Length: 272
Ligand code: PAF
Image (cartoon, rainbow, N blue to C red; front, top):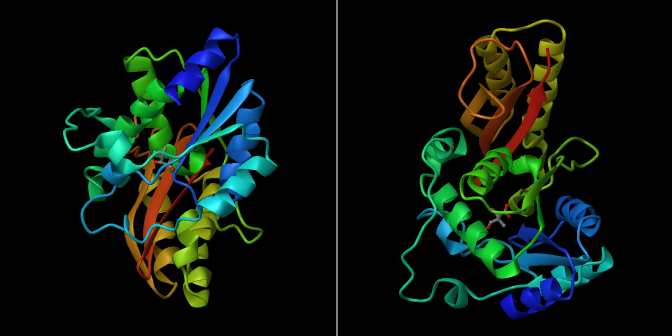
């Protein structure tokens, strides 16, 4: 991949990268369609990165289907799929990590302590291997997007980061490879996330400014569905991810909720 990227650059091409962990869905395809606009060559990485899974998480059971992924990627004009083995990426002697100081301390970082170190490290590796001009990430993993933007700025990567809005099912459920874990009943309860976000957006648009009140409404709504267990619901600054008390400007509402054995995340911008 490094040789191929070097050759593409030497021959005057630009490269767009969409990093994924595979088991592609419409959300990933939206990232690829966006990537297609920004590079002569469109590279998609498919790598279930072991270092971003904390002990006890779903690394082993994470869904994988390379043949299906290859067909889907091809259907939206992907030129190269980079799908390395974990051994080739990390080997036995690997010991270098990329760690951010503040941003991983909030939201998902609280219950997934090693997650963003694993993400920042593998994304750095992918950037060095694929050498993209542009890289595309989904806004569904909003914290990840903020972290990658910070990292790119801090470490002077000459890469433009593009965020793509969340793709949802018709009933509001945010697309995720992990939705495949949900039973029919759990799938109904999974709607508690998007519904509570919509409810919060309406309340804030109608003048509610107290973040605690908005969060309380969402907690009550989510708890009214069976199988749900809340990890966190937060209203925070869109850049620093620090909690806000008053919603005086666009603020991020982010949440993680267990539905049965599946941990789902979702978010929305609240605009007063
Ligand atoms: O968002 C994901 O799928 C992953 O966190 C990423 C960015 C591909 C890194 O493994």
